[in-house]
Amino acid sequence: MTTEPLQIAYSPCPNDTFVFDAVAHGRVPGAPALDVTFADIDITNGMAERGEFDVLKVSYAVLPYVLDEYALLPCGGALGRGCGPLVLTREAGADLTGRTVAVPSERSTAYLLFRLWAADTLPEGVGEIVVMPFHEIMPAVRDGKVDAGLVIHEARFTYQEYGLHKLADMGEHWERTTGLPIPLGAIIAKRSLGAETLERLADAFRTSVRAAWDDPEASRGYVMEHAQEMDPAVADQHIGLYVNEFTADLGEDGYAAIRGLLTRAAAEGLVPALGPDALAFP
Image (cartoon, rainbow, N blue to C red):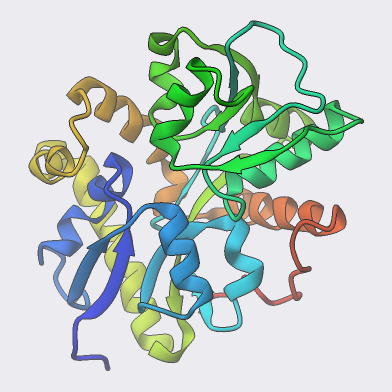
């Protein structure tokens, strides 16, 4: 049994702080102790590829590169419906063929969903892909530095403030073509921790999210402390969109969505193929 605190990294976004509040603050009996680091998803994806930290919140798109060392936990992550990334432009109905598009990470699930959408809808392809921090993307589109931007997180609720138009919803396209929920963020933990610790982690994260649902006010201070000056109403929308039944347990539909995304992405040559037992837990 592990006695040292486990090194965990997740984002400061409201869905993560809401989910992990109880366990991070020692309010889940029997849970492993955690030493928390905050990092945006592009950073944690890189940490996973380098084998850093015991537990990480990462993009599902990075799983094919890290599942030899890490196990996918069946809870704590972000899947859902109606919560996919958006492609935004200055002009309504713009044609992106050969255009420059800003994306938050080339290892992100958002980028995978974008590539799959583009393969279906833009036969001649887009032009240059530019990676930039997600909070810089909408200003860059507004200011004409790029032709379009792929946005995530609370940008779903705020893009109109930048005078931008929604060209396409990657989640709508994914759901329409597959019928499956949208896999966004995964919780992974090192296999070397052992089956017992992995099970304890999964139980602790399930308990933590249910505690947050039972008493939302208990997590509010932690959420708003790290919400980067976000309006509390937007933070609540963010939590409502990204924390759902799949956060408590992936279930059959969740696993089908993950395997569906990564299988199709592998067929397009975007990621390595998954082994038959790659998603097994523990």
